[in-house]
Structures are given as structure tokens and as C-alpha cells.
Amino acid sequence: MVHISPPRIEINCDMGEAFGPYPGGPDEEIMPFIDTANVACGGHSGDPVTMLKTVQLAKKHGVRVGAHPGYPDLLGFGRRSWEMSETELYCMILTQVGALKAVAESEGLSLNHIKPHGRLYTTIASERDLCRPVYKACKTFNVPVYGLPGSFHESVAAELGIDFIPEVYVDANYVSAYTLINKLDKTIPPLQRGDLYTKVKQMRDDDSVIAVSGRTVPMGIKSRPFTICIHSDIPDAIHNVSALQDAVKELNA
Image (cartoon, rainbow, N blue to C red; front, side):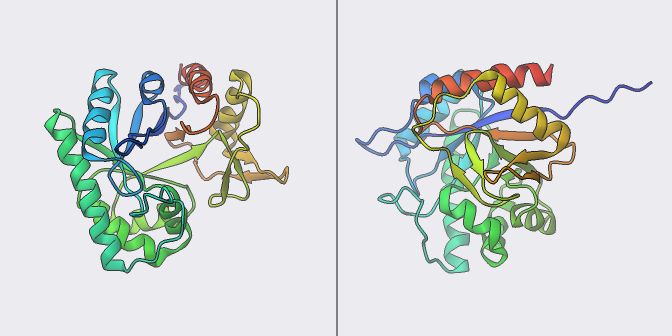
């Protein structure tokens, strides 16, 4: 009998989101627990020095580096709607990702992936006409994109010939399949390893997740490798990522 290994699961986290005197998340504490870092590129947050320090920290821990471009909205942290033309979106991605790619290469690292940030991420998941210019720019860099399975993230990537890696969330509530997710209430207790194991195992084995309505909704992972995003800007983030790493290690064994 041929043994078929389950799809590999990885952990990613948004990093380098400090800007000038304004601090970001606990990057130094979280970096040892993740596989890939989505590094802010100066749009929603991040600055040249922070980008370099974050890349150096990732290199120290053997973490692969991806670009995390966002709307040029420092005050709103890239979480507000932002009207931009297709040309503006295209050029924004080229310049933000290009800057991070140069910083990574200065440290002997290759760009691993691209994952848009915040409102840009959710907007292009549901609006094809805006996703296309963003992904056309991403195609320039010849790396995979992280995105929501079943959304325009995936279909536009396929249309443009871009490798796509499904992304799921364990510290967020799914409102409906594929597209609408809300970050968990910051008053909830820390995530527990057993609960994380059960949730991720259901995603992997049953290709589903329980939405806030209590309904089981399909994920669209379809036995593929996938990446889990864990947030660093909520309480107990360090505990959560440590517990998630334990759960993922067991599932990948």
C-alpha cells in the first residue's frame, strides 16, 4: 500500500510593522515559532531601518521572508478603504515589494512570497478588477502569493500563472466561507494547543471550518499544503504562536 503523506502546514506572521518611533509587535519573541515572515514594506507601516532589522532577525532564526505590501495609509494602518486607480495599485506593489526584495537580497536572502495587508487583502479577495493589477505586479517577482482559497486571490493567481498558497486563520472568526473573517475579540482567553490542534486538523482533513454562525463551511484547501496566519497584535500572541507551533509540529509529523 502506498502511503500518502498529509499536506504540509506552515505558520506565517506579519512582521516589521514598527515605524520610526512607533513600536510594532513582539517580533523578536515570535520569530522563533514561525516558518515565514510577512514583512511590512513602508505602505501601511514599516520603514527602511525596520525592514532591514526584521530581515536580519528572520535570517538569524532561519525564517523565510515575504513582502507584506499595503495601502499607503500609516494613520489607518492600512485597514481603511483607499481609492486607487489600477495603475496606482500596480505601481504601489512594484515599489513596496521591490524595496523589500532589495533589502532581503542585501542580506543574502531571496524573496519567498507576497501577501497583501489588511484592507487591500480583503478588498482584492472580493473585487476581481482590483485584484488583477495587484497580482500583475506580483507576477513580476516570480514568487507565490498567499491568499484566501476560493476567492479572487486564487482565481486571478491561476489566470496570471502565479503560484498560489492557501492561507487560513486560527485566531480569527470565519463569518462565511473563503472571504469574510473577523479578528477575534481581544478579550478572549489565550488559545489552547488542544483546540488549535482540533481546528487545524479539521481544516486539513475535512477541508472545513466552523463559522461564527455555527455552520460548517468548506475551506477549499483540497489536500494542498497551506499556511496559517497568526496575529502578533493581539494579547497573548506569544502564547498563541507557541501553542500553534506545538499543534502544527504534531500534525506535520
